[in-house]
Every structure is written in C-alpha cells, then in structure tokens.
Amino acid sequence: MVNEPLLNVKELKTIFSTEKGPVTAVDGVTFHVDSGETVGIVGESGCGKSVTAESIMRLLNEQTTKYEGAITYNGKNLLHLSKEQMRKIRGNEISMIFQDPMTSLNPVYTIGNQITETIMIHQKLSKEKAYVKAIEMLELTGIPSPEKRIYEYPHNLSGGMRQRVMIAMALSCHPSLLIADEPTTALDVTIQAQILDVISDLKKELNMGVMMITHDLGVVAEVCSRVVVMYLGQVIEEADVDTLFFNPKHPYTKGLLKSIPKLDGDRNSKLHVVEGTVPSLDNIPEGCRFAPRCAYADELCLNRAPELETTDEGNKVRCWHYKRIFEEEGANATTS
Ligand SMILES: Nc1ncnc2c1ncn2[C@@H]1O[C@H](COP(=O)(O)OP(=O)(O)OP(=O)(O)O)[C@@H](O)[C@H]1O
Ligand SMILES: [Mg+2]
Image (cartoon, rainbow, N blue to C red; front, side, top):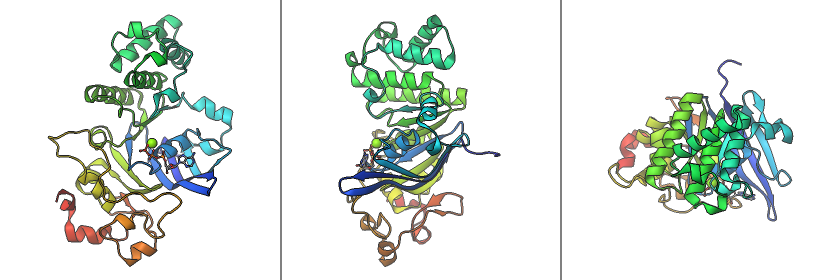
C-alpha cells in the first residue's frame, strides 16, 4: 500500500481480566507513527500510555490480557504474530526504552557484554568493533569513563546511569521504531537534553519513527511533531505540535497546558494540576469520560460519549462542544 504508516494502531483495546472482572485499560485507541517522525503520547498518570506501549510490544501476560483492534507495523498486524515472530521484531525492528530500566537489563551480565552483544547481532560487526561502538554509544548518552563502566554490572550503577545504559542499548540495535516510555524522567536536565539530542540525531540518521511517552510538555515541544493526548484509556485529542500548544481544542488539553510554567520558568513541567482526579477504570463515567472534571460539561456530556471527530484543520478531538468553546473563547482561553 502507498504511504502506509510505519506503525498504525487502530481501535486498540487492551482488556485485563482481574479479580473484580474485566478492566479495559486501553479503550479504542487509534494513532499512527510515520518513519522519521516523533509522536508524543501525553496524559496524566494511569491514562494507559504504558499499557498502549506494552500492547504494541506484546509484553503483557497473554493469559490475562485480551486485545482487540489492530496494531499494524510495516504492513503486519502484530496482534496476529506468533510469540516467536514477535520476539524477532522486538529489540530488533522495534525497540523500547522502559520507565524502569531494570526491566530490560540482565543482572548477570556486564553492561559491556549486553551492549556489545546487541551491536554484534544488529549491526553485524566483529566483537572488537562492537566494543568500540558500545563505548561510543555509552559516551553519547553521557556516561563518564565508559571504557571502565563497560565492565560493571547493572546493580553497580545508579538509577540514572542504568537508564542511560538502557537507552544506549535500545538505540544500538538501530530500530525502525523506538518506543520511549518516559525515557528521561529520572535524569537531570543536562543529561535529559543530551539524550533527547542522541535520539533526534539517530532518528534523522536512521529515519526512525519515535513514539515518545512523556509527562514533560517541554520534551513534547522540543522533539515531537505530533501529539496524542490520552485520558482514561482513550485518545481525546490529536494534533500537530503547534496547534496543540497554541490552539488546543479539548478542555482537558487546555487544562494540561495551563499547568506549564511560563517559558522562562522551570521547564521540567509535570502534568498533574488539572482539577479533580481521574476516575478509576471500574468506575468509568457514562457520557464523556472527562465530563465530571470539565467546566463546560452539560447534560449531553454527562449522558452521551462523544466520538473522536476530525477538525477542520485535520486534527482530532473528542468533545461535544469544542467548536462552541472556541467561538466563545478563541485560542487564547489557555493563557488566562
Ligand atoms: N496488569 C494489569 N492489570 C490490571 N490493570 C492494569 C494492569 N496494568 C495496568 N493496569 C491499569 O491500567 C491503567 C493504565 O496504566 P498505565 O501504566 O498504562 O498508565 P500510564 O499512563 O503509563 O501512567 P504513568 O504516567 O503513571 O506511567 C491503570 O489504571 C493501571 O492501574
Ligand atoms: Mg506509564
């Protein structure tokens, strides 16, 4: 097919069976990532960002997890692949940086061993060249004295150091798609910037698609071209980065943006100041999921769930009243 996206997630549902019954953590999520672009996934804690990523990687326990919809990567529906086929794609064509670095580091091998191994397999280099390359990758992620560090085991390293080793490893297999789940949250601002640069450089060099999950709207502004905003397991807005920041449509997105400190302030902004709390998955509101927290909600919102609509600009929003809100308040409603 012409111009098919690298990754196309369509109406994805991820349903966990729990003691209390089935819980739909990801509920009809649709978005895509093209080669060479970075798509941001944002939303408050618990909205299903990591579960979406883990579903794409098929990392969830399949005894207790059911998927619906399609996850098409390079024309193949990943949900239909065998475990073996999936293993070949994981850490090879699709690579993931986890929120918790220990998930992907093996405690019984030195970090040098682990990175060199990855490089030898994926870049088909000799052991000597892979070793040189491993040191280079570690250096790129800001690890001091990598030629010494390479002989250490994961447990000898600090959390931030481990995070960088994992990033070096994820990138050294030269993936076509990188899924980065809060890759820089644990790191200080200088290292954070350095790592985002490494990811950006490799993205250009390898034409890699990047799915960047983050709480940090500063990171979004810096590296993403498009942004998907999630709320309680659903996409509630999707827009190019300029529209998202300067002309957001959904009241929830507007709320998230209000939480960003001014540009000259602390750029390490977190998304947790939208008033009210996210309902739990076993108590999902009947109408619009955001209605109980929304200043604009009326009867319609409380009773009927809005669909994800395409806007005149070709972006997407799930809100009954976004046009009216825009007419009444304009794009500047967020800066009050
Ligand atoms: N194995 C599981 N069984 C049942 N519920 C789960 C399971 N894993 C995750 N959940 C629930 O799914 C929801 C989404 O979780 P997820 O980890 O994707 O959130 P998140 O958006 O990544 O949040 P954060 O920003 O805190 O990382 C949460 O309510 C979580 O409790
Ligand atoms: Mg998460």
